[in-house]
Image 1: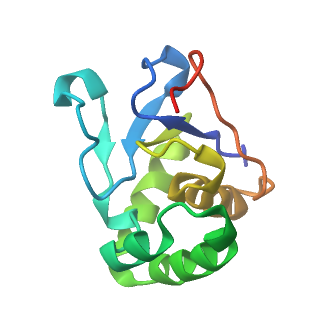
Image 2: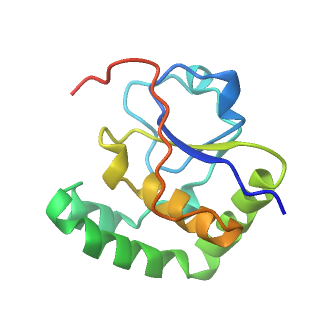
Length: 138
């Protein structure tokens, strides 16, 4: 079985042909982004962290380990499981890029999600593949 090619990028980066299937994994639409400019293949709101978890976490690096634990528990619920199955099916046919508006990709839900998807497909879970089209604004 060929290992899934799961990538993580910011939704604000210029789309690339290497992205394969582009899936937004945020619950809320990215601020200031036109829907046609995003060039999405799917918007998997069901795999995004709950509003309560997102509000608690606030992308605080000190909370990342606990965020990952809580988020992984949320992903085990039926709604997110269906969405994960859909993303796994997409990954079976080629590269999948998980998109998020988050600035720090390494501590994002997209990175956690990519790790889980890679684990299932036999890739190392800790490997975060990020592709940047240039410097990211802070």
